[in-house]
Amino acid sequence: MDRKASVVGLDVAAIAEYKQLHADVWPTVLKQISSCNIRNYSIFLKEPENLLFSYFEYHGTDFHADMAKMAADPETQRWWDVCMPLQRPLDTRKDGEWWAEMEEVFHHE
Image (cartoon, rainbow, N blue to C red; front, side, top):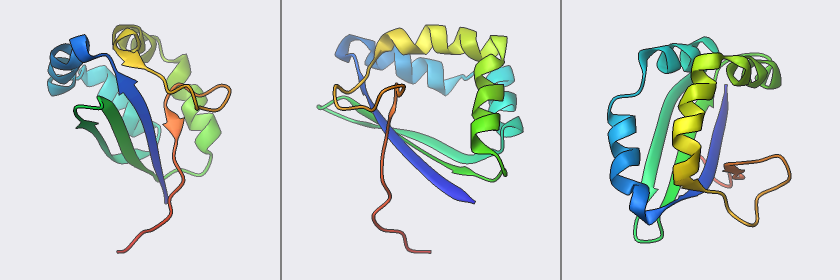
């Protein structure tokens, strides 16, 4: 199992909409997340900086293949089309990232 964390900004005017969307995530999107071996997925909001922090555990054997599977799913693409305009990627993210990946520097079970 691998733990993954990432961060992205959120448009201040979009906070209520983003919270509402995630209070009622489309069932097909949730099913796709699970089928791609993601468990314990959480998103936290830090205000007033308006940063979204994402955490999940990956329980598969080929992370890149599972992420490609998710990205190819039409319903997931539609979900991203709704959510991504509300987000503000960090200027410091690496090429190819939307959510900036974070390094784990401490963990305690």
